[in-house]
Image 1: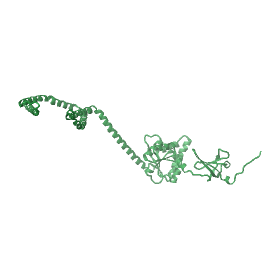
Image 2 (image 1 turned 90 degrees about the vertical axis):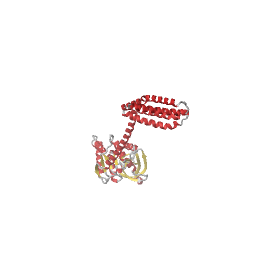
Image 3 (image 1 turned 90 degrees about the horizontal axis):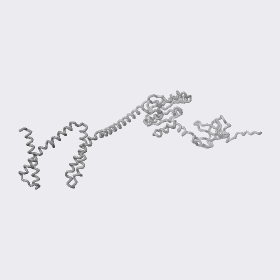
Image 4 (image 1 turned 60 degrees about the horizontal axis):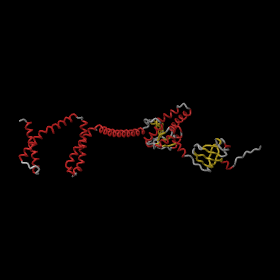
Length: 389
C-alpha cells in the first residue's frame, strides 16, 4: 500500500472517529436513540464524505490563496495585512457588547460573524483605496518634513543674521564695539537731513549706527543725480557720514540684505525685525510702516519737536527780524529750530537783531507760532511820524 493510500485511510478513520464521538454525545442527550452499530456505520459514511470533500473545501481554496498571494503586488499584501489588523481590532472591540445579546442566542455566534465581516471589510477597503491612503500618508509626511525644513531654515537664518550682525564689514571709524541689541539701522533720509551728526556728538545715541550697503548705494545714486538739488542733497549726506566718522558713535557698514525685497524701506524694516533693533529716520511713511510691523522707530523730527524750548508769556529772547508780517507793522523772525516769531511793531527793525518779550504762544497744525513785541516798546515807545498836508 502506498503512503498516499495509507494517509487517506488514516484520515478517513480519524474523521469517522470524530463523527462517532459527536454522534455518541448527541445520542446520550437522547436526540436520536440510535444503536451503536448504526451510529458506527453512519460515522464511517460521514467520514468518507468529508474525506471526499477535503480537496474541494481545503486543498483547492489553499492552492487558490497561494496563487493569489504569489501574483499579488507587494503593496496589495501590505495594505491587506494592515486592513486585516484594523478590521480584527474593530471586531474585538465589538465582541464584548455583542456577546451580551440574549435574544435568539445571538451572543454565541454574532462575535464570530462580526470578526469575519470586519476582517473582510478591512482587507477590501485597504486594498481598493490603497492609493488614496498612500497619498494621504505621503502628504502628512511631506507636510511634517516641510514644517521641519522651514523651522530649520528659519533657525539657520536667525543664526546667520546674528553672526553677520556681529561682524563689522566696513568701519567708518568711531570708538568701542557694539552689542547686537544696541544696533540702530540708519535710513537715507536721516543721513541727508544731517542732524544725526549733531545728535551723535551729544552722546544720546546708545549704540552703533548700522548703515546697510543698499542705503549707501541709494545715497550714491542721489549724489550722482542729474538734478542739481538732488545731487546737492546726496553730497551733503556723504559729508554727514564723514562727520559721523569723527563722532564718538560707532558707525558700521554691513552687507546684510533682505532677499526678494526690492525697496529700501522694506529692506530696512525686514532687517530691523530680524535683528530686533530700531530704525532712525525722518521718513513719515517709513515711520508708519515700521510701527505697524512692531519695529521701534527713532524719528529725528519728533526728537526736534520734543526738545523745542518751552516759552511762556513775559519771557525775553533775541530774534532777528527777517521779513514783513501779514498784519500792518508786523515783523517776522525765526528761532534756530525754525519756529516762527511774529513781532508786533517789528517792521521798523527789519534786518536787526533785537530783544523781544513773548506775549502769547499759539499751537497750530503746522507747529508753534510765537507772538512777541520789542522789549524797547515797554520802556520807550518809538516816535511816531506825523505829517501835515
